[in-house]
Amino acid sequence: MRIDLFSDVVCPWCRIGKRHLELALAEWAAEPAEPVTVVYRSFFLDPTIPPEGRDFRAHMLAKGGGRVALEDFFSTPRERGAAAGLTFNFEQIDKAPNTLLAHRLAYLTPPAQRGALLDALYSAYFEFGRDVGDVDTLAEIAIAAGHPAAAEALLNSDAGTAEVLSDVAFAQQVGISGVPFFIVNDRLAFSGAQPPATILRVLRQAS
Image (cartoon, rainbow, N blue to C red; front, top):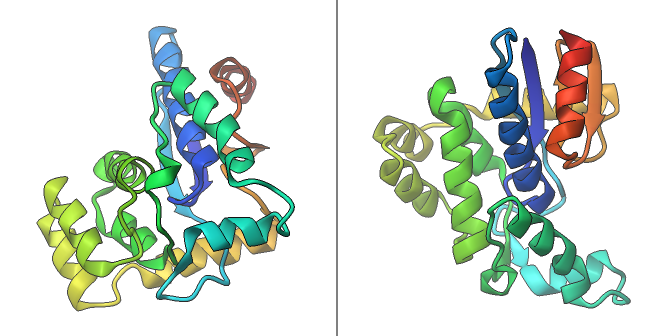
């Protein structure tokens, strides 16, 4: 079974959705079920953010049209994340980054380690407020995660760019407008950080 997961590293619900998928897959593996391959694919939550990024608080307030308090954006993912064992320190974040470089780094990482690399990016951004749009910061994260070759390629080439843009174009073509978005066996699809039990029902339906 193949699951294509479209996500962005600055999307709190994508982090939660990934964790929920992992919890569902842990139960799936305990059953007499077929193996599952998760393919992580790129999506730009906000493609208008410039390469240098934007001020995070101003960006979030603008999303709410100035009518939504910052904590109203953060309280629900903070609570849902905590229930899944995830920490969100939104107050640590200063910049809303452009995520092209982060997605490139994911593609430069071997597929079997891509999920762990994404976890490192989520942690760096949501727990420590690191700028995951900065190439030097990303290289440090890659090296700490054991991927110096990916860091070198990110710094010295445009490798991975075509793959990222291909994912984004595909998402637009098929009408994906929000993430996380899951496609199972090219046949079933669902969006949002669904509970593990819901994900398991979809997997059983697809098998």
